[in-house]
Image 1 (cartoon, one colour):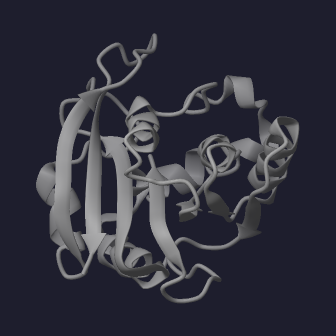
Image 2 (cartoon, one colour; image 1 turned 90 degrees about the vertical axis):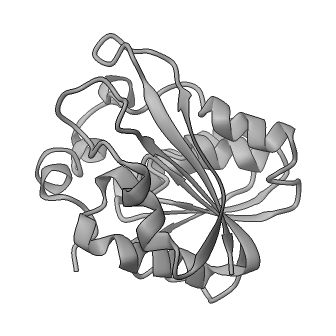
Image 3 (tube, one colour; image 1 turned 45 degrees about the vertical axis):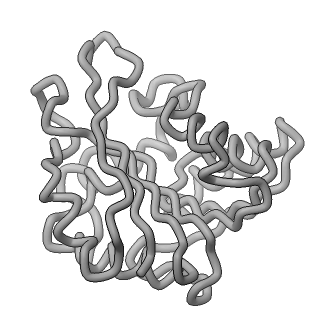
Length: 206
């Protein structure tokens, strides 16, 4: 099954091959403030084994590696992985970057303490959400943490990723995860999206 929505596949999946990073709307120079706080609070502690799903050019993976996590970034775009390795090298941090589909990640069962999803789930096809949740659960050790950040239903209206309700997130995850936290937060505004309301979800592997 194709994991991503038709709109993502048709319009955006090839941008890492054709565009400079600075022209891609979702690539910024900073990581989510929600993720930063998880590191500050040691919810994601130093030494944690982290898998960053659909890692793109490695901004979040590099940040986590710089703060002492053992990180593996996964993406199916060779161009994105090349950029991710270059970014990690620029910062002098060690992180692994591998090619893989988010519904069939080529990593062993129960090998991660944290699985990180930054703006991935809101591009996943609704009929693939349960498969994606099951794959995230497979990668995590019992009690491991699934961190999800995505567009909320309070986002500025418009095109782009799916605006997610709480049920869109929680219902596919419940067979495998307990909800530890789910809240909306305001992220940095952009010209096109001046009212950035995102979800932060923390889900504990059963």
